[in-house]
Image: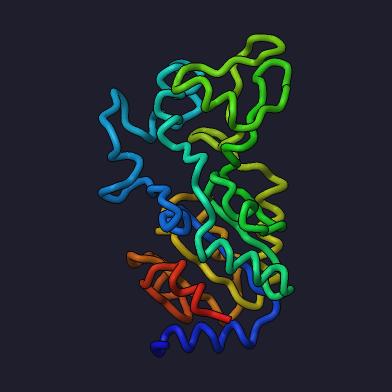
Length: 241
């Protein structure tokens, strides 16, 4: 075990109220591409509009079919939790990890067994009729094959419970995440470039002395961290007790 990994293990051994804050890089080892890298979702195929526009509330309202054509590229129903998800669930079961705060919408933390998960940007597994409010899982979205999914009860559009550009984050989720981070004696930030706000700003609520960043690329928070590791997050966490 190298020096940085040994330091991480020492921090873990001396912590009992850990919070994990993660982004797209946590799920790349589950073969879910991130957004902006060379192999990212934004690079998968050519679209008529920039991805940031297609993931906006206005675009969903005014170009609904094109929205779902793009949204389909973000769905990976066969993805399985990787060692990072599994280790975090293990730590929660052992009582060391108190919460997971995630920017991801894939539901893999829950699939791995994590219970206290704050999904800042929603989940692909929750979908609601825009008219009657009927709940749907992912199946009708997949069955639409990039077309517009319709409510079987009233025929209105089924909208994914994901936060689009131009929409606000859920206050209950934000408040829960802020409270968890404030109370943490150790904050591990992994797989996120910390450029998407307001989510990235949540790191500022941590005031302890065990801020760990595990990310492939450098971030603007590196200088504030007590430990920075650039190795694959699944590999790193799996090596810890």
